[in-house]
Length: 388
Image 1 (cartoon, rainbow, N blue to C red):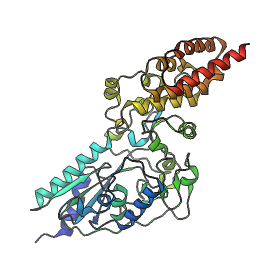
Image 2 (tube, rainbow, N blue to C red; image 1 turned 45 degrees about the vertical axis):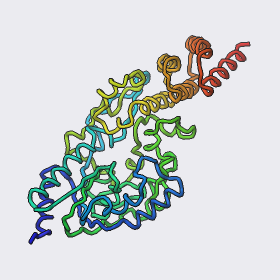
Image 3 (spheres, helix red, strand yellow; image 1 turned 30 degrees about the horizontal axis):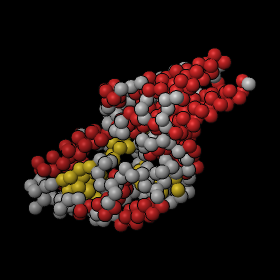
Image 4 (cartoon, one colour; image 1 turned 90 degrees about the horizontal axis):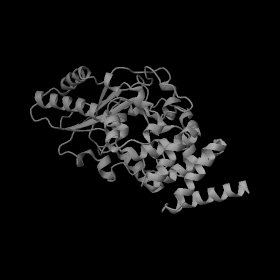
């Protein structure tokens, strides 16, 4: 007869050899509290649209694997600081990928670790089965990790661990092995609301809820035109947002450099903005394809880079922005260009302004997007009014 406590200890030992920084165990019982919260979020319109739409699948592990009895949760800590941060100077402005996108795609890293853990179970235990998932699976990584004792859900909605703060990647595997469960972690946030207070867009709601429709991390991944109120708040972020993590007291003294594959390439994590605007699909995949932040393709990255240049009011970007306005077939990109040009308009010197106006006059006759056409026309009319 299998000693499941001993098997658990063996798996814990093996997980450390595989580079797993923390491991926890919980039952495959339904996530009843999560289910109620998810239905509430749906009613409030807080969901992002990226998550699994079937709430039953997200909260009923038995629907995902026949005979599921346990869930094994793992956490791997990632760095807070890069070894060398490149200069961000006038004319050489840079964008920012959130830390979750530094290094190799964490989905692949954790999937490999979970596969090795699962194979260990299969090799050592007759009849053992498993199903693993990372981020894009049906289950909530955070809810599983919370119940498995990895950490607690902060008001930022991030999972916080005592050892590594919230800078951890999460994954889990369902198994038919009835492991003794661990106790859920204690919530240590208390009355602290610093993450809520510092959220740039007010996306964090009291009670540990996130309005994804306001969250910069979500907004930077969308492909449509960004809502006007959030463009300034995005700053120079081109993928994700770290603000709620940066201000968290539990992240103050942590900086985990345990996995070489998670270390940032400074030129990728903080890329120059203007070169991003001319990347082909092939160039984008070759340069950024290994980052988790590349999963939505180049369009959101380029759109966000244009917004960042507008927020910097970087007039050196004007020629490239005008090229996009002339050549890019994507209306969202051209509309975003007009916003950026508007932001930097008052910084154009007289010669530059003349060149920009001439370009706009040539573009007016060919522009077929109503919003872009209207902006160009109004801008040209205003310039004529100023010179007469």
